Amino acid sequence: MKKLNMLGIVMAFLFAHSLMGQEKSMDLFTIPLSNPGSPGKLVIEQVTGSIHVEAYEGTEVVVKASFGDGRGHHRTKGGTSGLKRIQNSSMDISAEEKNNVVVVDNDQVNKVTDLEVKVPKNFSLKLGTINEGEISVKGINGEMEITNVNGGITMEAVSGSATTDTVNGDIKVDFITIDQNANMAFSSLNGDLDITFPSSLKADVKAKTDMGDIFTDFDMQVGSNQPEIKKNNSGGTYKVQLEQWVRGKINGGGPEMLFKTFNGNILIKSK
Image (cartoon, rainbow, N blue to C red):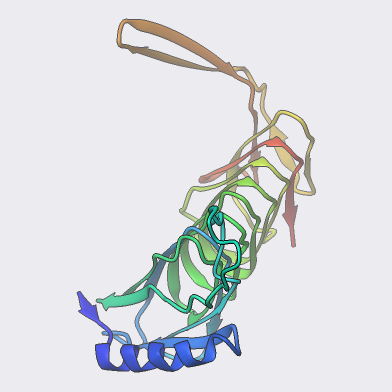
């Protein structure tokens, strides 16, 4: 895998260190692609902070970052009374590119790092964060896999397909066009799902909310909705689980669109 020019990165980081006491936002790197003009993929998985990805007219991947106070979830231990805190300007972020796949590795566990990334429009995404962050995507056309834990997911003016999952947060997606052959899934534990599709959507809908309601402005043909039975026989234990799902067809049916939340409403909208 091709790494970025290390001299350029080191110089950028040394320059960044001199600024971190004054500014908390900086350009990290500009990453050239092996095949400019061809579809690519961006992979980012981090622990603390937000991720914002937006399409632009260029042919490179541009990464900027802003930083929190450097402490994140770190708890100061005893024995520091009377001592002065020194600004911690250390940084541990890297990027690699191979065959138009760009991987940004953020190992700053205890520092809030908000990443702002610009990519060409035809790009697939695999994004994930855990604490103190939202994930937003704008203008992308591709396959998108987005996961969060303690934050929401927003996707604006996107095309292609998406699989999104969060624990504590809302999910809002606005599709311009979709991949007519792709299954999709949208799930949260504590949050609303607000998903807008083109009016030409053809889909088999599978939806479930335990403490909320399901709304749609599509003319959806709802089925009999018999309980789904799951059986598992492993380790000498036989388990049967019943789950009640709302099932229906939009415009005659098509790929499966799954919507699931425990504490929230589900909105399936057309435009």
